[in-house]
Length: 76
Image (tube, rainbow, N blue to C red; front, side, top):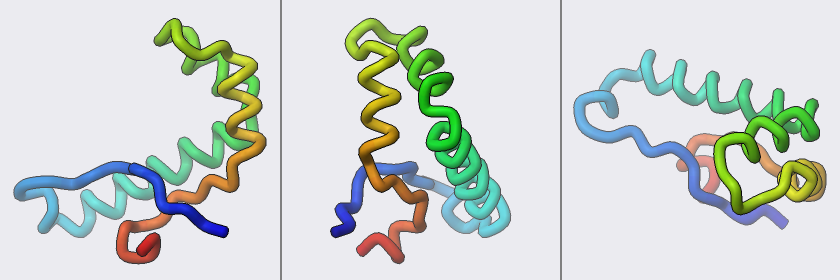
């Protein structure tokens, strides 16, 4: 089953800039694909910026979660 999770919100005047919104979504999707493909490296990079989650925990979470980057309208 799919469970929508928090993502990126576009606010203010940027909401009306379809090109910018598309670029943001594409960058988010690319980053997610990179993390899913290289879970260990992504876990290490994330953990280097905070001290609550171990890199192994982040990598295991990425491998276990069926993450997808989709626009909010598709997630509903």
